[in-house]
Amino acid sequence: MRTIAYIDGFNLYFGCLKRVPHCRWLDVEALVRLLCKENNPDADIVSIQYFTAPIKAGLSPRGVESVKAQSDYLRALKAHCPTVEIIEGKYFIVPGSYYGDTKPIDFTQKHKVLRPEEKQTDVNIALHMLRDATDQVCEQQVLFSNDSDYTPILSMIKQRHPDIRLGVVPPVLSGEVKRYPSRELTNLSDWARKPIQESILSSCQLPDKIPTRKKPIIKPAHWN
Image 1 (cartoon, one colour):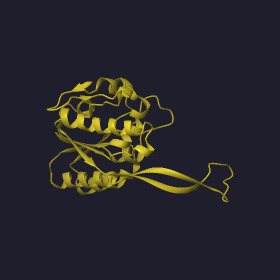
Image 2: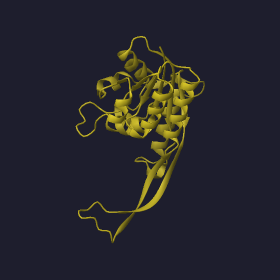
Image 3: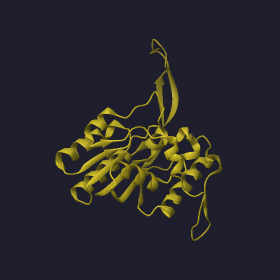
């Protein structure tokens, strides 16, 4: 069964990897193969599309170090995972004014904030999924995200391409009592995985040092 995986990189990070820094050097190809074949041993992974955006040092915990860590990780995926294609969107720092989190809300006072805003990822994923379904290059599509904003694209593929099998892997860590797989996405899928155990993430890690034609790519020290 020809299978393409679509990974929302930020959803994967904030849903799983932010809580387990030692698992951030994730071999997404190994993870995709493991989870898809766990569901169906006949799954043949023909492509893994990883959607992300370059982060900004100004809103990153470690500044330039965080930017370098992300850059090194993307380079490592390109060097080590032949089926992974990286599709980049945009990342902005957006100023705004918002009411404070009080009860009752004080509508007379706003607080100035800076917030990160990722652009294009959800649209890119939707376009790539619809393109691949229309071009008939796969028999199964697996979405790695827990964002219910993807409900319309899954619904559209169900309507236009009912022969394509849809899977959903929500980036939710097992044991997280406050986070659950999206019911909207689960209801539209042919199969959906339960939350992911930390042990699975730990077993799907890139080598600490990845050789290249120039200098090797080293796993960031603060990801150990």
